[in-house]
Amino acid sequence: MRIVASVNDPPVWVLPSPEVRRIASVLTDAEVIEARTTEERARALPDADVLIASKISSAEVVLLKRLRWIQSTAVGVAPLLVPEIVNSPIVVTNVRGVHSQPIAEHAIALVLALRRQLHTARDRQSVRDWAQAEIQAVRVPVLADSTLLVVGLGAIGSRVAALGAGLGMRVIGVRRRLAKPAPPGVTSVVGPDHLREVLPQADAVVLATPRTENTRAMIGEAEFALMKRSAVLVNVARGRLIDDAALIAALERGAIAGAGLDAFIREPLPDESPLWRMPNVLITPHTAAFGADYWRPAVDFFLENYERFCRGDSLINVVDKAQGY
Image (cartoon, helix red, strand yellow):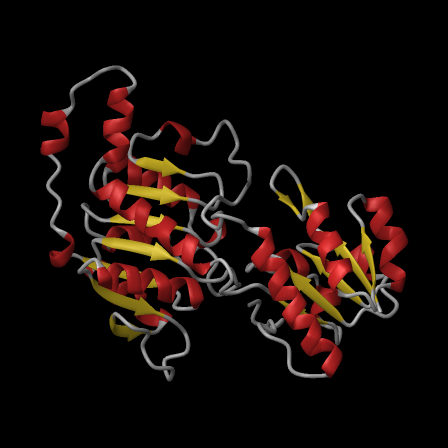
């Protein structure tokens, strides 16, 4: 069995060599190849049975002669789902749930920071401005009197909902599979077709849904027009869930109070993006998943799935390639 480990998207999305060596030390019956560069991938892919990766090109799929399984080290798998992979028998799995706790904590941190004007306090701190009157003028209801709308109730969204409910917020969820029971802390669940009906109730909206054709630009001009002017929007999922032009316009005219953004259409966020200079925006550079150790639990998950793969058991977190998650 040949396993090719190839996650190399600097500066941070790089599977550390010690973790690759750990895989090799555990799976002594397998050949484990570390392939970082395009040239190394080209040499290794034709004989690969298993690929650990976060992206692949159509040109590289042509090289695959015997690949049966791709394990993504991320939750989002869009960069792996080129048409040739989608239309092939190759199984794709992701690490859904492995990093849900730090991502959920990050989402709630952004909600609280925006509502409590911590970004304003930090900006004024840099110029030694005692902004007491300015911050006092922003009226914010306590959490027990606030509604949190979580769009997407997978592993991450369910954790966001639980944390929000634990802080006293009323939580509404949006998800496609309405037959499933509501996660703990969620008072009601609606389908995506009812998103616009519940948006006006929300004091905070957290996006935690996968990027698919159905969710592309799901928050746009019409949605911003329905939101409370005091509401905040947090995105810890994918940048393409939001219409950027509509977001910038909404923030400029005060249609919403602020936005906490951890994911963007282009990353790094280009220097010319107006989001950098907006005082009511908190930007984090796609760091929501980072905690004590990002890679060890991802590798542990792969090792568990590999055991199942060798036994012929069903793998964990098999992606519906047609749905995109």
